[in-house]
Amino acid sequence: MVSIPRPLRTPLLHTLGCELPIMLAGMGGVSRHQLVAAVNQAGGFGVLGMVREPVERIRQEVEALRAINDGHFAVNLIPAATERRLLMDQIATCLSLQIDAFVFFWDVDTGLVQYLKKEGKQVICQVGNQRDADLAQSAGADVLIVQGHEAGGHVRGTTATFSLLPQVVANSDVPVVASGGIASGDSMLAAISLGAQGVSLGSAFLTTHEANAHPHHKQRIVTARADDTVYTTRFSRNWHEPAPVRVLNNAVTRGDYDQADPDTLLGEQDGKPVYLFSTDSPLADAQGQLDDMALFCGQSCSQIHTVTSVQQRIDTLLDETHTRIANLCGELR
Image (cartoon, rainbow, N blue to C red):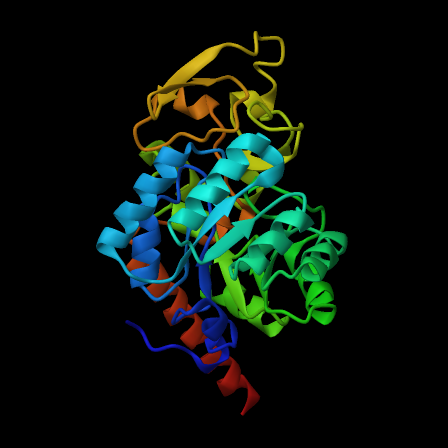
């Protein structure tokens, strides 16, 4: 492994129990055990994306992960977007599996955060504004992930990462992690410079061999530019509200389907149908009209040029960070 630049040796490493301040975003369907294990093995902190998943899949994924890796990891759930009985079953299953850390997103479920803290669990909350950051911290969250407007997938806030980040850092007593628009050593170092103790990466890890995303989705990302992404509410099926997402442009974002039957079948994956306007992105086994599905992608796509292994992606991030630090030191002499 490439040596760790000193600025990246933050207190977050002790909090999460990892070697690098690089978290895997808990992307539903994409961040399964192979990707989590690869991120852990490369020194980062893995997060299983289990939003709305049945408890059987959570159990299978956790057991499969532990069979190949013994690193620290978290399970990502989204309380607001999950039917309450299923959510409670998910939590109960995670507790029975002795999961030590959870990542939550969207509305801050203060009661759930407080409950898990009483159970001795670590709680990480991803937020998109100062109000949610304050709520999460007052509920007892151990770490905050600040998600900027540039991020792919569901986007909670409306402020750019590097504008919101220093504000939340200044008002936080717990480690803050940056998310959105980060997929290079330069952008990672910029986040650290603004007070982040780490970064959470989605698009950068979706475009790896280990990610459970369809090759078409990965290839669209590596050939995209930042202005090829679209902030839209068109993909709202399977979600509790018409929430904004950031995706790559396609027939849906262009409005080609605006008058179509919302029950139009686009394809299938995981043994289930995928309908028009669904929030399901095309996974590795997806079949059908893949380009008309939700191709989640952050504006960091302009920093991603190839599909690589997780290890190669992280090595490149560290190499770029070393180079930027060396250049800055040289310019300051």
